[in-house]
Length: 295
Image (cartoon, rainbow, N blue to C red; front, side, top):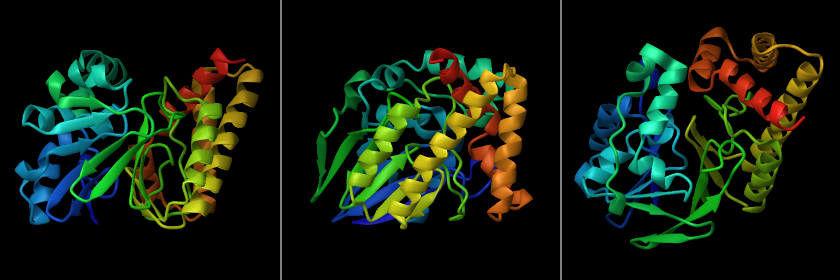
């Protein structure tokens, strides 16, 4: 199996969102579609690898956040089977609630950032249960239920590789700094710890992060990331116990993360890209929301 990393150049910036094209004995599968706003870039990247997009009949999305699955309906409408978590299926068939939520957050910037989201024909969307396997040519792709970032999250495992979506965080340019994917509304630290323990038990030789690229120091990455999830959660717990409001928690979280990243060699330009990929303001909100629900 060959894995082709397709850079979607989100917001005209390289190395933020990846799709992965799996090639084996003439069969093709796509993992992650990216948002509707980068669909043209995805199609161009597929052609640049020498493939015809019409030959992609199997599409896997780790979860239904717009940066991962915004273009899934386009593929389904053209005959591809789209595989997803059971809790994600209805949102791919009818994305109206997803788009409405995005507009509440991003307002007039929604279309520029994310583009449209085409409803997927119901018969083309297949929900996979935990541990269920899809055969594509000689390979098997297995779904793993991996909550923590979202309750509708799968990682996909194939030939010792794990396509982790947001379950293993954000890491750009192989930096030692790991940004925790904690956007609201479903960030859940206990579930996240269990997910990371499960990924550690998998013994994978490579993780493929949607944000961004291949990770080969898998055990070190996952152990460090598990500690990072606990770190940001406990930090926000302390601030909430002090009675700090949402704006101050956002500011404190951003400052703490920027200081940590700088100490690990992240310069201003790379930090800008981290914020585009996984903004600290939204991350702080997701952690705070969990803390408020589970005092």
